[in-house]
Every structure is written in C-alpha cells, then in structure tokens.
Image (cartoon, rainbow, N blue to C red):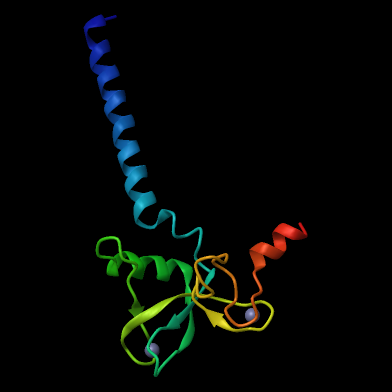
Length: 130
Ligand SMILES: [Zn+2]
Ligand SMILES: [Zn+2]
C-alpha cells in the first residue's frame, strides 16, 4: 500500500465537499427556495390613485420579480397589469370586511395587518383567542 497517495485522496474529498456546498448554495439562492412557495397567492394592489387595481400573483413569481426590480433598500413597485405603471405593492385582504390594503395602512401604532376600514387584525385576534 502506497501511503503517499493518502493526502491526495483526502484533498480530493475536501474539494468535492466544498464544491457540493457551493452548488447547494447557488441552487437554494436561485430557484430551490422558490419551489416551496410556488402555488401560494400573493395579493397585490396598485398605488396609482386612478387605478387601484387588485390582482393576484404566484408567490414564486412575486419574489422573482421583486429580486429583479429591487435597487438598494427600497421595496420596489411591480408592474401593474392594468395601468402598466410600476406601482403594484404586496397587499392583504381583510378577512372581516374584504377590503384590500397594504400592510401598515392603518397607521404606525397598529399591527401591520390591521384593516384601515374596520380595524380588524388577524394577528391581534389570534393573540386573544388562540
Ligand atoms: Zn395600476
Ligand atoms: Zn376590515
């Protein structure tokens, strides 16, 4: 048995592991993590006052678009399919009155999912009756 080849083998194994790690990193960054959210619906609302269009996006498409449009720290507006402006933002629907609003619309002192119309918050109600 030739012992001089052992360090070479170990080196090769380490390289293989490092490579596998890099590949796993890239695939999880790219699309691997998006398959988990595909099929989930992200509600969108257009900020354009004359439009206010509400539509649904696949969560995976939403995240992909968001990555493409993001510059710096600002959350970008995505293209609205109705008016064509980059003014569509993630929104939620009030389970009580059905109004669609952007998180935080009720004000800074309220929970982000508080409805600006009726004041209902799913988070708050979950907290009081678990
Ligand atoms: Zn619009
Ligand atoms: Zn409401």
